[in-house]
Image 1 (spheres, rainbow, N blue to C red):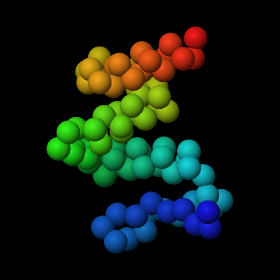
Image 2: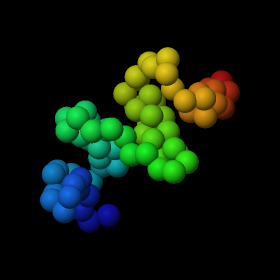
Image 3: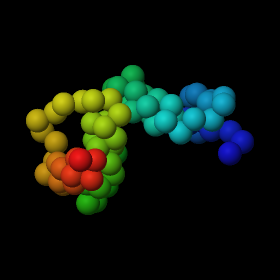
Length: 82
């Protein structure tokens, strides 16, 4: 991987040197808060659920309003971890 960047509407917002996937994901989540945007919503809702799952795991967000499908994934992950 030569270069990793965060881009929005055709403009590079941030370049990661050296490339770091973890930092890029955390920056992507933070950019939704910075730009006061909502997580993307696909027809099945899976895109938003992926962002909610990553947010919960990486940022430790404790939200009682997680979708049931995300709760199931978290439960399954805790079973594997134990």
